[in-house]
Image 1 (cartoon, one colour):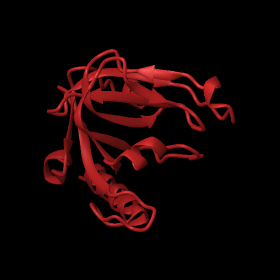
Image 2 (cartoon, helix red, strand yellow; image 1 turned 90 degrees about the horizontal axis):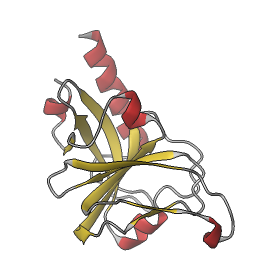
Image 3 (cartoon, rainbow, N blue to C red; image 1 turned 90 degrees about the vertical axis):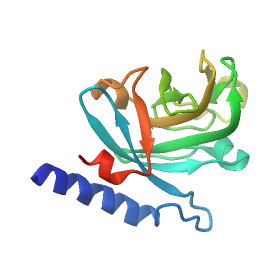
Image 4 (cartoon, rainbow, N blue to C red; image 1 turned 30 degrees about the vertical axis):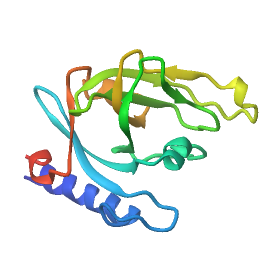
Length: 164
């Protein structure tokens, strides 16, 4: 019971610091509550939602820190090919990325390394290796430490389900 209370307190604090869920405020992205669901656990997260081209292109560039259970959800209106992926230009944080199908099932997870170079050609790109509709970036090690892997899924906007 105390763990559930603490989890709710942490999520509430994160949401309060980022603005209200779903709200878009000058320069801030909408925020969604979600959880990664495995066979044995649910892992609540707070995700900034990048759903337009400009927000997806900027992503987490220039960020110096990301809360432990916070990340960014990238949403596309069409299926992306396996060759498409993410570029770490001006990204200061080591990140893990989960690529998701249209139902929220994880189809691939990759580790990505920071690239603070001022020359964009110096920065690697990380293709998904599989077709995908969405992607979630989290701090490096997030998925491995929670034993989240391909086949697990992301559930959004169902706080009661995520906090059971």
